[in-house]
Length: 120
Image 1 (cartoon, rainbow, N blue to C red):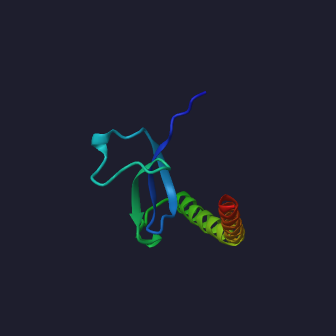
Image 2: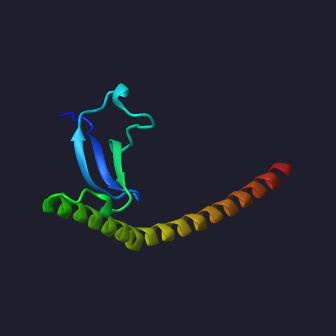
Image 3: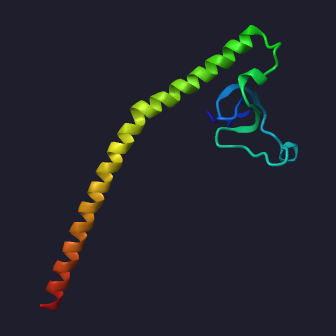
């Protein structure tokens, strides 16, 4: 079964936190506003707020709950990445650096050996 990519109008904060999104049809090129494009996640319009206090005060409680759940999810994800993933990536980078330096030394030795064998 073939699936089509989804496209969204998103609502969020300036730091990139998304607390709401509406799925829409793929926008026509002529309907995109100046400077808008479709990002890799399918978002083509992002309504940005400086702070949650800038949102309309008459939002239903349900919308406030959804918004705050989205923000909490974003914070939890960032913390998990920072605490669980980044240390492992640092460790892997150190291993790659060590292997790269070892490989460089091996290549240099091989080049010297081949150069001396070629002169004999």
